[in-house]
Every structure is written in C-alpha cells, then in structure tokens.
Length: 332
Image (cartoon, rainbow, N blue to C red; front, side, top):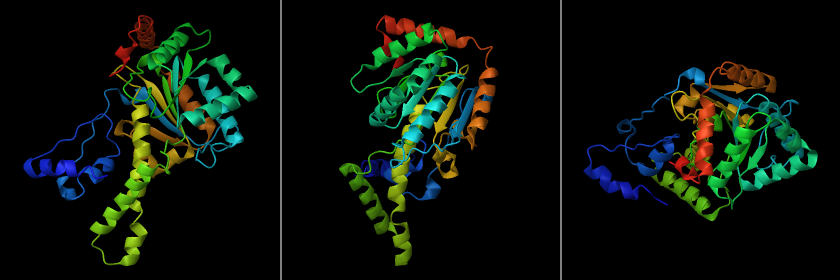
C-alpha cells in the first residue's frame, strides 16, 4: 500500500533523485505516492515537448454526436442504447475522413463487446465497414495475429484503411508502435476508470485518505472532513488519465509522423481533466461542443496532409514483419 517505504533510504542517502519515464502525467500520481513527506519546494518537474511540429497533431474532445445527442460514457449511462447508437454514427462519419489506420480504444472488453453486439443488431457495424473494415481485439487473441490482420486490412482494403477496436489496458495499449499509417487517428471512447469495487483498489484509496488525515495538521475538523476524500479521489482519477495517456501515446512515433487524437466523451472537455493530458497534447487540444465543429477540424487536418506519402512504406513494412511472424518487433 505504501510505495514510499522503498524510496525512503534513497531519499536520505542521495543528493538528488531523478524519475524518468515516457508516460508520467499526471505527475502528482508519483509525487503523492513516492515522496509524501518531501517539501514541495524540493520537487521540480520537466516535460519534454514532442519531436513533431504542432501542425502534425490534432487533439479534440468530442462531446456530441452527429444527431446532437451527448456522448458521455459514465458507468451509469454508457449502456444506454441511444448513446451506443450515437457512437456508431460518430465513428461512421469519422471513418470517412481518416485515411489508413484508425485505432479505437474502449474502456473495457465488456463494453467493447456490448457495442459490437448492438452495432451488429442495428446494422451500424455493416455501414461502418463499408467505409473501413473493423478488426476487434479479444482477450485470448495473440497481439501479433491481430496486428497482422489489421495491417493486411489497411494494405488491401477496397475502401480506405481499417479500424482496430481495442481496449485501454489491453495488450495493444502498451508497448506497441502504431506509427504512420497504422494510426492516423487514435480515438478513446469514454474514460477508463478502474473498477471502484475492486477490494485492493478500495483498500488503497482508504489508506491514502487515512494517511492524509493523519498528516493534516489543521485543527479545523470540518475542514478535515471536507478534504478527507480528495487524495483518494485524485488517485482514482490519476489511474484513469495515466491509462488514457498511455493509449494515445501509441501514435506519433517519429518527427515525420502525424495523427489525430480524439477523446470521445464530454468529460474530456472539462479543464480539470484536459490538464492531465501530456504537454504535447494539451498544447494542441481543443474541446468541441458540436459534432459539426469536430468534423470540420478533422477534415481540414487530413486535407492538409494529403501530400504525405510516408505512411504507405510504414504499413508495408509492418505487413512484411507480421507476415514473416516477426510482429514482435513492434513491441518496445
């Protein structure tokens, strides 16, 4: 429960400690857990920018679908059939704009399967596949075989590329490079909060809140009570946003790459949430309030990239790797 114990000796003996990582935002996730007793003036943060120029990245939150219905995938509302249908219309419209590969992350395998069944029943999946065939991640499938099928669809699609439907926290959300044509767009459906009823997570949150109360030197009991849940809730939010940041970081893998990042949930438009995105996304991020505005931005972005031919060679190379059963080279 207390990872700070493992750092106590290091902090006492070292003159300085450097923590380096590829996906460390939100930073407070680490500072609160590893250095709770360290004065704030002794903590310094640095975020590197991205190697790509600003015009190579478009980042948007999408709050509403084409019919004007809200897109908010809370645990209570995401099973609503109207919401799932609106998501289908959203993806169907975006598929018209995105060239080559479109990687779409769902918050869980269960919800991904729920959406797939609904789209099959309504015919939405058939309509989407007319624009881009879809490849679906499953729990038991080998990542290399999924990547091979996805790359094959991109290369030989009679339409324009393919969509890879996968899961945040799944095998395809970490350690894989979706460079160039493998991910001209990365979409995240909803906010992937972990199961709040998980016994270990509940105990961790309770421990964080207890420690906060113990360390709080304020004698105002009402004040203590009002803030007693803040650290645990923040930890819970951080788990979600770290998973999002890990997933969207699968694209834009070199200085000549370009991609669109779409956060499909109205909650991403809240500043408190968008502030937890990596700096290279925050600097290029816009919260859209209508689907028309999002559609126009995506269309304009890809229209400006039509002269870029880099993607074909990347997808071709990936296809050769997977055909020769060397797809593991995509893992880093």
